Amino acid sequence: MGCCESKVTEKQPEKLQTQAHANNSRTPTHHPNPSPGSDPETGGAPPFSEFSFSDLKAATNNFSSDYIVSESGEKAPNLVYKGRLQNRRWIAVKKFTKMAWPDPKQFAEEAWGVGKLRHRRLANLIGYCCDGDERLLVAEYMPTDTLAKHLFHWENQTIEWAMRLRVGLYIAEALDYCSTEGRPLYHDLNAYRVLFDEDGDPRLSCFGLMRNSRDGKSYSTNLAYTPPEYLRNGRVTPESVIYSFGTVLLDLLSGKHIPPSHALDMIRGKNIILLMDSHLEGKFSTEEATVVVNLASQCLQYEPRERPNTKDLVATLAPLQTKPEVPSYVMLGIPKHEEAPATPQRPLSAMGEACSRMDLTAIHQILVMTHYRDDEGTNELSFQEWTQQMRDMLEARKRGDYAFRDKDFKTAIDCYSQFIDVGTMVSPTVFARRSLCYLLNEQPDAALRDAMQAQCVYPDWPTAFYMQSVALAKLDMHKDAADMLNEATALEEKRQRGGRGS
Image (cartoon, rainbow, N blue to C red; front, side):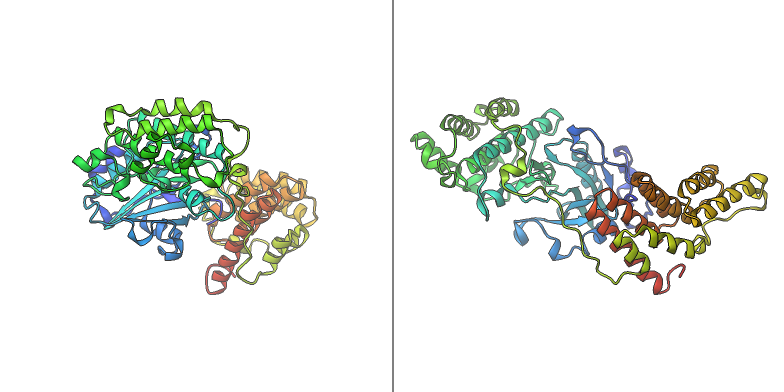
């Protein structure tokens, strides 16, 4: 919970041989998940890690049917759930059966191979779970539906032509990146594998980079859309992926999922207009459409060697981009993805009410009245540690308390900082008090850091979460602030039922 990251276990691939069979008997060492990378090429995905099954079970509300997001439903060979980690990161979790991957070592190695990939055009794989009989993959969650939903099942408006060209280019770039990185095989590429992120940008699902099972069965779609060589020998090749990309281009052109053989008949008969989506109402460039039709035709050649490669796809589609400055969510006709603030689910305490109102004066009065009651048990000092330095440090805290009581908040910050910087004792209350002082001095970033430090010292302390809520609201992160307020009230309710403190 809170701003501290969810706990996962990172393992290096070379350790898998000795660890993969440990299963439920092992007790993994947990530590914070590293922060997401800042490199725009990676899409901000965090490093690849192993998750515990309990983390994923909690994130998906015990794999509730309400959390299933796989549009293929129960007929899919495996299901995809959305979930939310304790660090508030949304994730997508793909659940396999043990029968599909009976060997945990083989599953882990396959997952690690995909997990090395990081790109802004991918919905990146961020982890896996191989715990007992459980086999799961964890990826970035894309909240704005699939290409299939926007093309075939749209409610408000169909995708405009320029956006369709962008989808084609971005997926081609994703495939080219994977091919360059030595992962050219993509299993069952179709419109359900193309996802839209919070900005409306199309991304290629990383799940298709991993086989559905150890035997390599790769296509679950209608045989009419399956590469002819796969029907002959049951193997996926890089050229098979190009064929499947051609079927996605047909989807983009027609707005329908039509069999390649029917589309090729229309193309050979030069009935391109009949192929085009009527919902576009003629609002497309015939020249651009002709280029895409020709590219699709090349991708769908019966002989694999006659198909283009991924670099050819990018080179053909890149010059067709006519609206590079227009955000994807605008072209999709959707609002920029911002979740509405959550309504608190429980009655608020006096502290909760004050934080909900962002009433800093009321928060100050509560902290003064609470004093250091909640610090009990956070420090265990030996006799040798009661030195002059310790006495000086406690004196600094006392001066800070006087200043805090008297609303001299800048002096309080200075005195509390002297106490904190020595580091011999840790006090969540001091962090909470200094956090409020920073808020009263218009320094919400520093206030949030202190509130997070208070949580690190005392992980289940409601006040730490309340202070984070106020700081996040001051930073205009209102959805996160509401989530934090709910977490604080839940912890407070737990305390009232017999938890630590009162």
